[in-house]
Amino acid sequence: MRARDLARLVRLPAALSVPGDTLAGAAAAGGLRGPGAWALPAASVCLYWAGMALNDYADREVDAVERPERPIPSGAVRPGEALAVAAGLTATGVGLAAAAGGRRAAGVGTALAATVWGYDLLLKRTPLAPLGMAAARGLDVLLGAGARPADAARPALALAVHTLGVTALSRGEVHGTRPSVAAGALVCTLASAALAAAPAQPTREGAAGGAAARALAGALAGVFALGVGSAQARALVEPEAHHARAATGAGIRGMIPLQAALLAGYGAPDAACALAVGVPVAARASKAVSFT
Image (cartoon, rainbow, N blue to C red; front, side, top):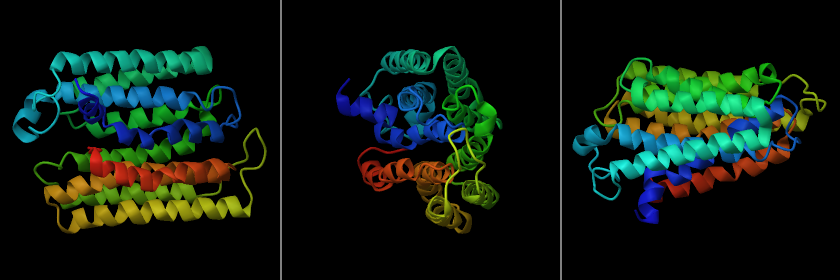
């Protein structure tokens, strides 16, 4: 297996949409300066890549008909190799979570890993698929919250709601979607933007952020809503497959400004700005390796 084929298998640059989950959870719980706050994102990335590899393993027969260019049906990656990559990355992700956050993080990481595997192997072709993927994103946020998961309920909900809409819309990437599905995804995006822009409660580390931080949170939430919402609106008006595909990609990349908005709202504008740098990087990288 060549490095480029591995990158395509795990959707390598799509991992840019993941670290902000645990960082937002840590900021909400007042633990952004904790010793594991900046290591837990690595665990999230490993579990995300594991899910992408497992996705292609589970979909290999369907992809042979609908997406023959993907690594497994094209012959670039063998099914056993994809499964081994998924298993290895899962073990690495849970191990990193345990090392960075102790027993509690290991428990959340294990639950997240089980949700990822359950989604790819069981839920994906059922009506529960969007809920399964939303649960995975919510757990990823809670992974960063440590011993205070209740404090991270709002960012977990914001990311989960957005993921619900993106996943529902992604099911139309090949054959097209329905206007009602695109409309639902747009509603989810707007609801998540509202959650991110709302004033945050103070954390254990102090105030949730001054006027400048709140303004930054609102601006980033607006960037998220405009960028993702406009693509979803096109899919609503013209629900063809290429519009659903474009809206799905925009939704994945849009995770970054949404996470940045949540970070700013919880008094971490520096981290929010650093994360927001990933938006143009992700857009450029998605032209080299597909996010979907």
